[in-house]
Length: 308
Image (tube, rainbow, N blue to C red; front, side, top):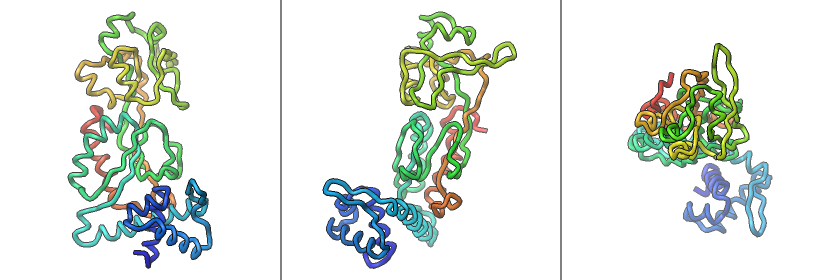
């Protein structure tokens, strides 16, 4: 492995992703000194510094970042080619780094992962749940599932579906507080919300043929949708959440939809986004393409909403 360029690339990628010679050496069953020497020879051959070294840290240079993206793409293409030969065509392997929101990951993706891994046991899932918008390139993510508008023009996308957001509350919260008959009644209630920079503190409703915004004000703001759901279930206030997020709660009566007659029915689109050849990162590995196809085909099983 050490005597060929693809082997050098693999070792470089391990160092880049683990952030140290010793961690990469453990994964590769080599000594840290052997890994460090190989990286040194690679830098000498390329004529650039790939890693900035100090006594306490190892971090990639700008050239290292650029080389990593190309090396990762080349290794993915090699793996893709091998997985399409003979019996391996039926057994894709390797790691898929996935990023998704906490609600979608918890209520839609996790329930179908076992089925996907049962079909493709050679695949390893590296899953990160966060409601923050991550930089796919910087976070070395293969697939991100995003809810709402897409702004990054570098990304390729596959639509998974769309979902409205609903105003919901626990039945016992509604029994203990003033009735919510019109959007203006929200001013008398504790409205739970998000603390994202991109979040909004008002909701659009349609009333008397016109659309107008109503403030969503309360005493708790949180950084993810699953926490907001739990707060609503505990009876602390009213929340606005995606239908797929609360579909099971509504069906079980744990939450009740309010103000349905006034909803503007703004649908949030859900996409799988990824870097591909058109974005300059090489061909999409078979395992990644299969995963995206699987999510598109099976997400509806746990959405509780028409995905058209």
